[in-house]
Image (cartoon, rainbow, N blue to C red; front, side):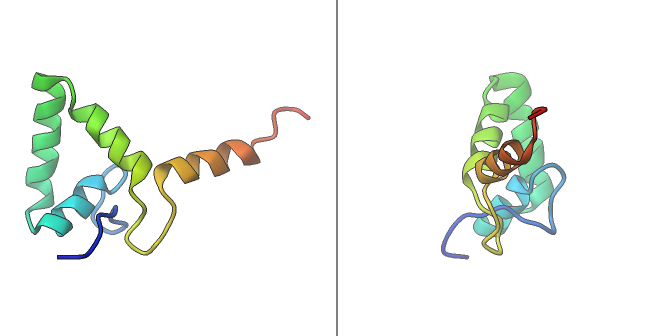
Length: 81
């Protein structure tokens, strides 16, 4: 097990959250994806947890968190100035 949670660059469908968590806890990433989808459909909070983890977890190689990526994207956007 790695020392800290992170998102995966290689095992990802949307943002790498499930791939990173699956590696951290040594479980199948597809099983984790199914659990997130079921939590989103039946418990109405799976998508919230996924988005929060995407915003807070960095990539496995020390890359930016989702929040840092969003900040960079919006700070580089020229709004007609």
